[in-house]
Image (cartoon, rainbow, N blue to C red):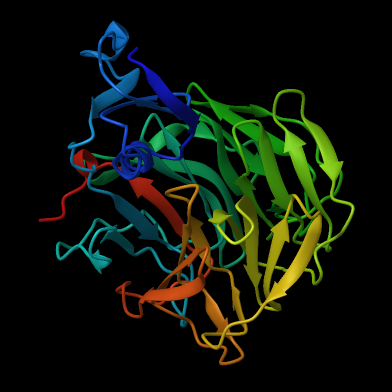
Length: 357
């Protein structure tokens, strides 16, 4: 490895490239499967394991960013459950013009994750039926996966906690009971994970850093930081100001305080947690008072995107994509989605796995 300028956790290779471009002394970068981004003055000894493998990515500051896409699928379209699937170009925020293959059945409150970059949709609910099956998006078509959730359920919250390792938190089973169970998805199978201190569905979660997961309950105003090394749950001393059922959470860098912060959106408003202050604050914007059952895309530690949802106080289902960063909430594209979306799934997907143009 060349002369190191700095190194830090990054969400994607694109974020690592952006950091190198913003650092005057950076001429090369290294980004590995542990999401570690190294900024380098030179490339005198770049790790040979990067060359010709998928273990890491390296390049010059002049490298072009990878094209990013997201799959937005299933959920509720304002009239009924839907099986529709669309691919969004995250450079233009336009839906791909080629119609995508529908999901095998209409489903609401499903869970999305990836198996070695293969997008999967698992579980969910439709017309009294709860599912545990998973389907993988392979060769622009859906195939039943050998992996299944351990329980028929809706509203399981999925987060990638390590490269190619996911956790699915809570949910509601077919008896209408909230769950305090979790499932770990790794090497293509689901196994029981650690128990949660509270049973809930319709909460939200996001990785705060490389070792800690933030979790907001959907049943109360409790919230936790979870150490993923030993699964220690530490409840925040100050609870979220208003409980958010159907919340969405993301992280961003607040440059006013020069720290990473968490924003949580729900029907009852938008609230921000500043770890250094150990404090929740209300965030207000003329754009909207609340946004329930939206889904987030965490593309960077600098910002996150919010897709769809139901706006309050208008109670309108949206086709919008919003962005939350140090400047607060902004509307990126009002009609980015082809369909209104609510209780849907949103997940990034590699360009080679889609049919877009």
